[in-house]
Structures are given as structure tokens and as C-alpha cells.
Amino acid sequence: MNYQETIAYLYEKLPLFSRIGEAAYKKDLHNTIALCEKIQNPHQKIKTIHIAGTNGKGSVSHMLAAILQQAGYKTGLYTSPHLYDFRERIKINGEMISENAVINFTKAINPWIEEISPSFFEVTVAMAFDYFYKSEVDIAVIETGLGGRLDSTNVINPVLSIITNIGWDHMNLLGNSLEAISYEKAGIIKENTPVVIGKKQEESWPVFTLIAKQKNATIQLASTNCPVKEYKWKENLLEVAIEKENSLHSYQLDLTGVYQVENISTVCCAVDQLRKNGFSISEESLIKGLRNVSTITGFQGRWEKIANNPSVILDVAHNVDGIRQVLRQLEMIDYNHLHIVIGMVKDKEIEKVLSLLPKTATYYFTQAQLPRALPAQDLEASAKKTGLTGFVFNAVNSAIEEAQKNARIDDLILVCGSLFIIGEVDRVKLSQ
Image (cartoon, rainbow, N blue to C red; front, side, top):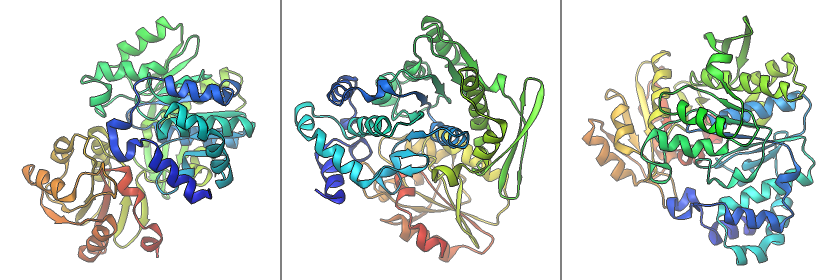
């Protein structure tokens, strides 16, 4: 099989959560363990950092990877899902896994796919571990897919665990209370392994401290150890002042969403912990890494401006907490009128998200091209119940095109609601 045939085989043969949702989720680590044993457990032979959280884990993963790469470490990065190309999930020093590596791995494990019947995610996790080991990375940053305790990535024994925050998402799989969700995320805390918590929350903090004590894991709270004292936007960068050991340190970030303020605090705390663990990360590497995250890692879709006059912003915010952060950002910038292109998937808190959105905006309801997507007409029907009205489009690019026709030069077009919606945006056409 060539590369396209290989990807088609993986998509068609294996249960894929992004397409079908809960039916693809395996609630144990049995398949991952079995698959990794077949390939000689490469994850046990590399150093890793493990990152979980409801929101922010992707941003923190990319920031840390950029910083470690700037510090001279050959750095693997595993994230999910991808926006445009499957290979975005597995990178070393910002370069995607080669097509040949994907082909060869899939061919090698084909008999075990038949024997074990893994999910798409379980196969990609094993592929990442195998690729990182064979490429002799110095460190690999591993983002969980969903939850933590039963996530396929949770077979690793990292040098550091990080939990960004806890919010309402995937309750059908993780639990119907923030305490229950916290317990699932806390599953990445390992014996005698330090853990950094990004945000102290009333429901989650007691869970994290209890599990950390049981695991004899030192626990660091980023918002206490590396608090943000002030932030501002300067020359298309987010400038943040963080207090560390009673002195202020200024950092600039090319990811300009205001919600990144919290993530920078988490990253700085994690870097301090890595330094204590023997990693040589200079202040210059930290500064350069944060300033060039997108360039170094290819990170996209977080308050990302891809067009001007009118401005078109892409953001993968898709749950209550993520949308609240986007709304906070909107309050801080100037524009004439807001146009929102939105599409969601079926298993999200649709009406709760819609109830947060401004009723004065013009809406363009759309859908991603996958079975799990909520039909645009259904989204519009739910929106009407919360007082939102607009137009319906079967494809996101048609929706954006209509928004551009309707918008004035000083208006703002926001595209959000689902990572899969962002992944279908025609960036080339919009940037012309």
C-alpha cells in the first residue's frame, strides 16, 4: 500500500473516535499494552512528559516541545487529533513523521491488528512510541487523548506529569461531576514522579493532592509557583510577566489568545521542575521557545488570525470553558460587528455552549464532514432556543465565504465550535 492507501486502511479498518465518538473509546489499556508488547515496548525505553487536562493541554504540549527543542534536545511530540494531515500527530523537532514510516509501521503490525482489534487511537499511540524510540529522541512530550487514567497514552512512566485544568467535557465517558473527571485526569500521576497542576480549582485540587500523596508524587501548583502578574499585547505577541522566586520574568508568546496566560504559567512551572530533574534549559531557550511556538512546532487553531479586512480568526474552542475563554478574548479587542461561523459535534453540551454566545452577532451554522458532526440544521434549531439566529451551510468554507461577503472591513469573523470545523477551513484561499 502507498501512503494514501495506508491512511484509508487505518481509517476504514479501525474505530475512530473523531468520526464515531463513544463507540471507538476503549475503557481499558489492554489493547495498548498488548500492541506495545508486540513491538518490544518502545515507550519504556524513552523519556517522556505526560500532559492531560480539559483545555490547554495541546498548547502546553507544543510550548514545552518548542522550549525543549530550543534547549538542544531532540524532542518528540505526540498530540491528537490532527487538523489537516494525519502526520501532524507525530512530530520530532517540528517535523512530521514520514509517509514511509507510517506505511512501514502499519505493514509491520498488520497481523496484530487482526489479532488484537485495536482502535485507531491505540494504533497511533503505538506508532508514535515506536517512531520516537527508533529515532532516538532525547525526550517525548505526550498529550493524552481523552481523560487520563484509561487513556491509551497512560502506559508510559514519565519524568513529569502535567494536568492543565478540569472542565465539563466528555462527561458520558469521564463522569458527571468535576470530582469524577478530576479522578480520571489524575490517573496520569505516577509513583515518585512530580506532577504540575496548572490551576487550583475547588473540585479538583483535593483529588489531585490525595492521589499525589498516595503515589508519593511531589505536587506543584503553577498558579502559586509561577503566578502571572500582568499581561498585554505588543506587536502581535502576548507579553506576560511571571513571578518566579520573588523576581519578575517577561516572556512573549506568538500564541496570542488571552487564555494562553494560564498556560504559560503552567509551562514555566514545568520547566522549573524539569531543570530540577537534570534538564539543561537556559532562560534564553525558554524565551525563544515561547516566542516561536507556531514556527517551531507548526501549532495552529488557537486564536489564529488567517485573514485581514475583515479579520478572520480560527479557534478550536468547543466546550463551555473554551468558549468562555474566547468570549473573554472578544471583550478585549475592538471590532465593529461580530460574525460567528460555528459547527459542533453531537456529544458536546450544545445548548450550554450556545447559551453563552452573544445574541448580537450574526451566525453561520455549519458542520464538519464526518458522522459525529451535528447537522447544521439541528445546530440552528438548538440555537433558536437560546435566541440566536443566522444562516445554515453544509460546509464551513461556504459559511466563511458568506460571512466575508456580509462583513464590513472592520468586522470580525470568528470560526469555532469544533477542531474538525477548523480542520476543514481552506487556509490557502483565505490567506490570498
